[in-house]
Image (tube, rainbow, N blue to C red; front, top):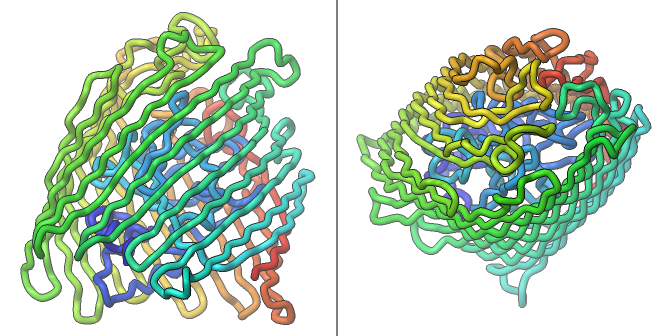
Length: 620
């Protein structure tokens, strides 16, 4: 109940609302049967990776709402982009707080939390991202804390390329003093995996330990969490196009407090506070590590609140605020820009107009204020209007029109390093980035199918991109660019008697202005697919068998750094057998990149090869 209240404002203008946020589109007392496609309606068939243990960003590469560009694999180094933005335009939030890494957005997705503890990701764009996102100008990947349920599992996995994986998870809940209104819970997990990699010098060694305690009632939920993650991985041309075998060693620690509270009819708030420490050891050449290596340590402290306050039957106020303070120690930065404070406040009043039975219009108009102690402040407009109708058969129709603005500042690697030399050259003249988004969306929801569609036009000014010049000795240089993006999105979900299906198509077109004729290639801003299709299927041929298949076909924009084709077709297949003689036992056979596609997701960086694995799990 508290989640429905907290997410009403978020989902009203959300186009792809099949995520957990989208459940609030359904009025109380009705049911959206289509959301069986995966847990909480995620937009992919598979939920787990093939070559390591599960993480919050696993299988996002097949999600039609995002474009995940990986090095080695998604769980090694994942650049998550939304609607043609770049990795630093995408924020990741847990509870009400956006998690940041001040060095670089490459580490935004380093989230040491077991997926069992979190909801499926909600993809926030447009007005919702402007309201709730922090320092993320295009979109956000948002997670909520799940209520703990008594359950556990142990898993053992093996595969080709000397892959092996071990994992244990357990959670226990109990009532307090016999009261049905209050309960407590404890949850923990430990996971590790290693392999030689799908290509030479693509090895990895990962481990994660995470745990939380929880206090929950009918109107509140409080979580205290701590997680630790250690990741070593290698990959040729990991960040540079110079044909060397690079490595990274990352350690991430996250301490977080979260409280959700419902306090009146259609009113609730959520408070989050966290401390995050991240260490990175980058080696340019594993054969000659002394040629260049870098050490970074970032520390982030933050407190945030989001909420919705109902004022009568027609009026409500949506709000969000976050304060963040960070600092960095680095062997490669100039040490004159090593700390920053961020402030954001969003207030968006909401007014509902009843047209007739089960039909209404919701209007939201407000603004966000962003500032730091080192950059100019900015005020951004947030607005949308939504028409929503529930038919007598419980099917729904939704049309939304929105105009929103968002802003962010560049990370330390882009702005705080050397501007004249070095492997990664900074630009100390980078300005605050601004993004304006105009969007029209339509959603149709029936008992056994759902269709979501949107067309949008976005203006990005002073966007920080990383570029390459054949005449430069640097691997990449931070440069500003103005880009206009036109996009079309379409996603459909269908349920059959013994199968579920989700398919999508996205179209993107960009026009850019770098104001510099010496730029030969863009690593990120112009690394996007003008055309992309996805198809996910879950099939239950018999009671003990389950087949899950995700497919993606894309045609990528041409890039002079890319070696090989500009088109790619990826397939991820999982077959699960649950023997009826052994309750709780699952045996999973899985393959990723079934066709051994060698497509370079990052221009100049080799693509992954195929990976096969077999995993046995016992659940209790």
